[in-house]
Image 1: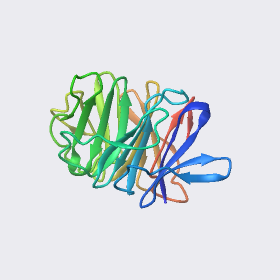
Image 2: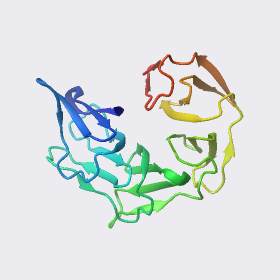
Image 3: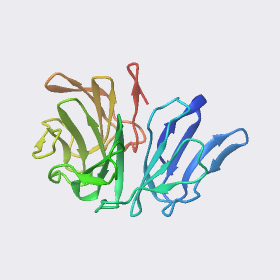
Image 4: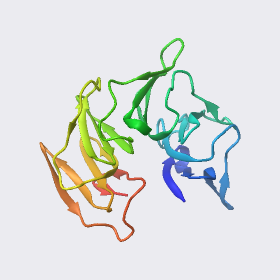
Amino acid sequence: DPVAIAETRFLSTYIATRGHGVFREGQGGWEPINRGLKSRDVRALVASMPARGDSSLYAGTFGGGVYVRRPDASFWAPMGRGLTERRVLSLVVEGESVYAGTAGGRLFRWDQEDAEPQWLAVGVPIPGGDVRGFAMTPESIYAATPAGAYVGPRDGKSWLPLHMSVHAAAVMASDGDQLYLGGDGGEVFRQDGDTWTYILPESYYGFGRAMAAHGGTIY
């Protein structure tokens, strides 16, 4: 049951699964890479610098927190310090910071450049509940939750619902300055200024667990 995908150097492809950990595509097919990963229920997977050789992989697990696999490492190392909610559902890397969205509407930030990095809570919980996915702009954070989509300032001290025809938001993706949101029924919306435009009909397969956008193409 794949739930997320990431790419690193030479377009190496990795997938995360709920129950079987992380797999890497090799010449002979998909191989598990779970050494050090205490929880195999992986809900999020992201590369720090996609398509580069010095990219790290981050895995968010449901109940076990966040793990990192450094370049050329053969194991996952836990990133647990300060993370008070370990049911991680989504991850975003921005520069030297890693952000985690969790159950209960929480967001956390890990700053790599700190002398002793730890997870710090970002603002107050999002009213919609579990942070299934989120995206960031220079001014705002957009979050997908079971109660719909919400937007707040970068400090996360307040949240407002986005008024759109989706009752439960599933995922979010960014392509440069362009944001996309996926609903529980598989529908996709694009942000156009202050409004959200319905651009794709409901997927035959319904709820999407992951979404990515690049060059105007949605995956």
